[in-house]
Amino acid sequence: MEIGKAQLQKSGEELCGDSIEITQTRDSTIVVLSDGLGSGVKANILSSLTTTIASTMLKNGCTIDDVVSTLAATLPVCKVRQLAYSTFSILQVFKDGRAYLAEYDNPQMFAGGKGGPRCLAATERKVGERTIRESYFNLGDGDWLCMVSDGVLHAGIGGIWNLGWGWERVGAFVQQVASQELPAQEFAGEIIALCSKLYGGKAGDDASVIVIKTRTPRQVTLLIGPPRDPADDAKVVSRLLKAPGKTVVCGGTTGNIVARVLGEKIEVDLNSSDEDVPPIGFIKGIDLVTEGMLTLVRALSNLREEVPLSRIYFNTDGASKLTAMLLKADRVHFIVGRAINPAHQSPGVPPLLALKPQIVDDMVKQLRRLGKKVTVESH
Image 1 (cartoon, rainbow, N blue to C red):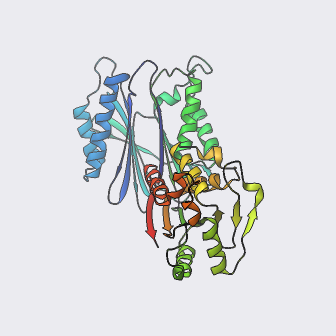
Image 2: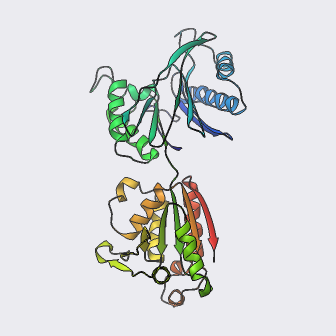
Image 3: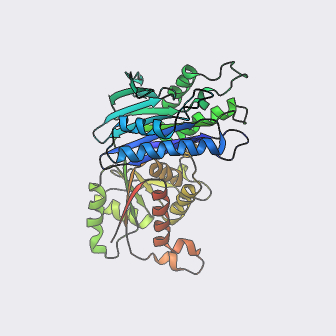
């Protein structure tokens, strides 16, 4: 599961009145979106209580009936406005693809997949004095879900549209964005960006978007630098070739080793370079071949600056291609050679380029910060 989220807070407020809680259990992922009554600090407290109570109880094995009963007792209905102090949407997705959705006074969730939009069959039932809408369904490779709070539906109210953006128009735009196959975070960002424009840059209500995408995990394995002992060349190349998913070779010397072991030649694409990054190469059987430290330093900079995938996806330079591959991956494995490159020991070489272990370590930290599962081995 790939999860992205984006929010707008009501103009003039310091806190968003919507809250999002994502919890992992041993066999499932729980996503809770709550919209607190009103806006600002009070709404934030109410919605935070709702998401925390719901996710904690479900994580500990309580039923949805237990959750709703507890919320009803903890957060009663406003006597003046006859509205719940907070609404909620609760999604629980199990590792085998089974999913359960409970919605209380929140907009109905959007769903789709490779075949286009999807209608989730729902039933309503009473839990105490609350009417909740429930859906049971299955998720597979390429499916997506999009939760929104009512602040998204209200965007543009009294302006472009008298009654706001509306569920149907939001759904059409969600489907349009889904067709672009963006990462979940950029998917959510596209929706909240248009929502902000419709509000004229001054949101009239708190607005939240959560996007969940399910797919087969993507893995990338990078071989960076030759092993300390040349006798290990064949073993390291074999490790790379047996790795699942995409394979990347970084470094001219490393590329020559891989080509020699495979009995192939390196072809250089001179059209793929820019002012700061040397050109990429091609080796049969390898998905990406780049120069070493200059490319890694630029890719690390892209990760630190959180450059969106959409900005670099069509770039042809090695650093952009490497960054895009890392951003799309769920699991990244580094095979790091410990041989010392004599060229990096020269007095005129910038200190950063001579610190390969530090660059790899920084890249690992940035990838983990982005939610990737990262492993490292050295030779």
